[in-house]
Length: 278
Image (cartoon, rainbow, N blue to C red; front, side, top):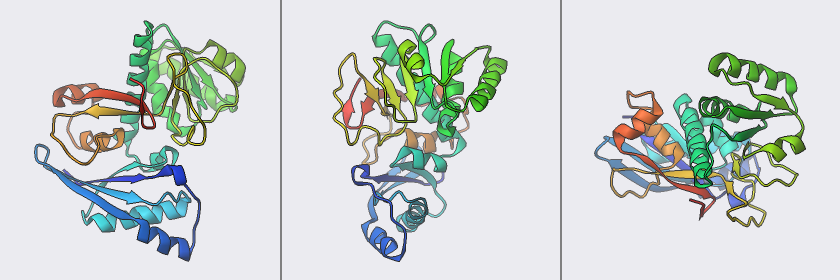
């Protein structure tokens, strides 16, 4: 297996800078945290801490610097910093694995409320954002009542047509936030939202809520991450969606459910930042 580079950052203190001074400063702040070897898989996992500079050019520069620091040659990236930025560096399998994780956690959360995802209304907002594409397709495999909420109705309708042709599910397409959130049993959101709602939300943008005081109760749930239990012993590296996707993509099994079952891996925690929701 190719080595894996796990990249983390403290997004509580994010900033946006680019230039000679910021390059020097960021280089000094980039630290190698650990290098683990998973004997059962014959794979090396290096963890590097990046400064929370989310200027696009600086982020790419810092990633390249992290590769040099870990000295692993060709690596598969497993960035776990600001997800909308990280997503651009996911491979195809990692994007599918994120989608699988989002839908599996929603399915589990609905089950704890004695609800079935097949009979519930799930809203995707903004439905045309690229980060939502695989998630929406994964959702269409499990859910019959999907609402595509977007200001770009033309693109949302094209997506709805594809879902109808591929899965036989007819999503509702709307740009009415009030209507969509009112009928939602669950919301998948890549955007911040400015209206009140009672439905639980899966926040794909993991910076949302960092500056706010979220009170998590049984009736007001926000989710932005999950973690998995693996059978490979105790390591410093955390087996996040990103790291596990980088491992599984190197195995022969393309079916995610089969890959997890074969390797004895299961969804362990559903979280909002450091708070465990389930």
